[in-house]
Image (tube, rainbow, N blue to C red):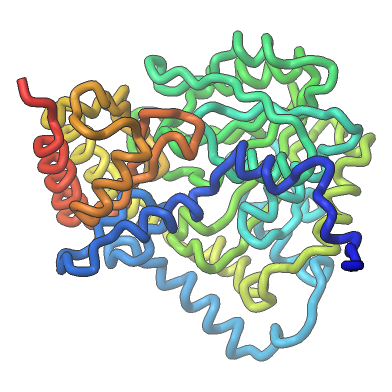
Length: 422
């Protein structure tokens, strides 16, 4: 008789199926699209579906950051095992960096250093799974890592709407309708991935008032902090922490253009001490104590990276993103009938656009559109279905302007070729 191993039994909660159903990750989707590429097509791939601008020369990291890493390695002080408590200088540097934008000062005790933002998200979501039956409010469209982490952690997800006709603002009415006694937190992504939105001071204050009314923790995903190039400046959600406690998720991945360095943070902004009276931060710290830490030399270099990077570097990167945003908005809004752009992106490096498949032949939906354009044009675009928005597309514009223009020309040619004949 065949022996049955206990670990081979099907999980009662169906965690794997739950993750597959609720959130197909960006990585998995991009892998699927890469399989469509034609090896006989000698043209270069145009990566309009990625979130990594680092391959392009115009988006190389600042010299100060590279020197900080080199100095940390050469010092030989960061070659051994270390623990999060061994890096108070890194935590202090992050606290001072975040405090620049707040009406009050944070301390190193308010900071946890993480392996990029994804670990910060998983640590936070898993710590919210108690008590059982908890639910969390996520935006739609969303960043699918939140859905995946919630599925693994057993936290129910409820999606509130973002309003494309109002520059992707939070639909506060849908938030209030979704929340109940088991709702523990709301996630706010600003600047917006995938929408390219930047929320005003007034809108964020309205969100904080709503969180205060409903008794919710605000999880502020600010990985694209200060990457703005429109009329609305970046405002930290922590500015309104007197109304509701805020957990800020951030990293150097995007603003410093080094996503592969994998260092981020979780920052508590809680002037009323609400979180100190709960077990949430203890659970987060317990999770991080069991998990891998960022590499030691990255943590050792972090204070110098945050302190010595010049404003000129950030302004240059934002100027290129502004130019790219102008290029993509002009092309998509005026030259390609089957794609419409609700508004010009104001921040981050993404834009959500609406795909009208009724104007296209032999293309049923956004996923088929992305599969076929990858095969025929070597253009990679993320289907909106991955983010919960069927027949939308998320397009990255953080490329060399000339490469971006070539990618848009290929999209235009593809759409003309597949347009319905009148």
